[in-house]
Image 1 (cartoon, rainbow, N blue to C red):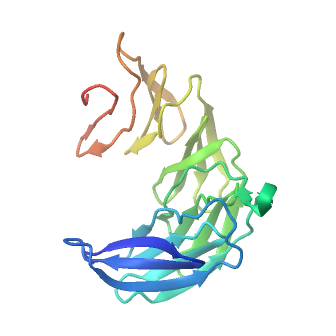
Image 2: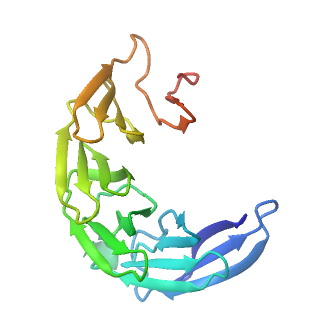
Amino acid sequence: NDRVWAPYFDNKDLCLAVLEPSDGTLERSILLGSVRDFTSLRRAATPLALADNVVYVASGFGTLFAVDADDGTPLWAAQYRRDHEMRRGGLSVSRSDWLPSAPLVSGGLVVLAAPDSPELLAFSVSDGAFEWNADVSDAAYVIGADGRHLWLGGSEVTCLKLQDGAEVWTVKLQAPVTVRAARTGDLIHVPTTDGLFTLRAEDGTALRHQPVPQGSYPLGNLPAVGPAMRGQTAEPPSQ
């Protein structure tokens, strides 16, 4: 609604700030909940997601919130089992290896790679009911979804059924990944130290490999702009 939404903690309270984009004026602050024990090392909420006029906020403290984007009314809050361990000094740290990722909304589900859970979690968009969880230990982030399937990246690229989280295929990468993979249409593009690998999203078939040109840096982020995809490196932008 032409506003900037930002999650933040005010002491132990998780809030949403709604800002005027032109000058950053705070229009309103929405209290979502409070944290009992704020000794966790993970003090920041994860990125937000917006779909069908609903804002989704992952707290990083065992709860996923859904908020009406029009009036800021909390619609539901879904809790899940956290996985953390205590460290010296009473601090707790998550054992999750997920990179910071916004919740992904597709096919009537909100899929969450929570910073405080090692499993991939799925909830109903209508009421936050838990739908399924998947143990994908080699995954680090969600690449995308198309309403039927979901793709994960990490040391492997994995495809799951969106309906129940069942594995469809997994491809082990032969070279270290430099940054996150990107999906364009029916293709998955994976930047590695050995070049750009392109897989068919449907079945994981390797379609092509574009080696890193001699004397060049490996590809970085892959933003897609219209029909083109740009590869960012430490050098001037290339396409």
